[in-house]
Length: 202
Image: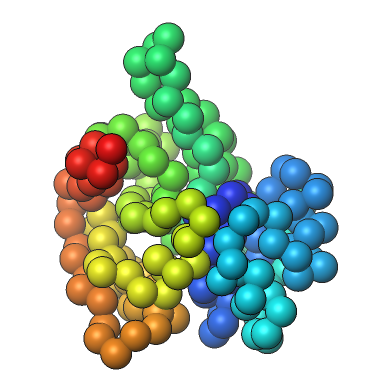
């Protein structure tokens, strides 16, 4: 998991219930907090899970060894909107994709960061990647783990078998009586769903 913000940390905690997870961040204070089982963000459920659950979760600032040992690398780095250029700053996502592809070209790369429509297709073509997909998140800051535990839907922007496996991985870690709806789409459709959802909620 690349990025220990509310998206990355909540997903890391969710998945660490059943899977070994390494969270990567450049912020040493966040890394140290996670390793002490102290939440660096305000989220009551994450704090509760840290106190009560046995999680297979470690954090590090050393990304390359983590990438080499991973089957899936999920990217949740900031892509803040720049009003001066009228675009998202996707540089951290692109840099991470390049690093992962060099360290472990067999790893599945899943982008959770908010990106413009067409980003995944453009990066796939630019770097000749077949192992890159986008999966939107629909989380509220402060209750991100709760929203991951009880998702109304899981969307993955890819139609292949690995997309289904990733969606199943998220669904298996969720709680609640009903299995969440899983929807596999083309990458651009998934990116549009995320942006349209954000616009509607705003």
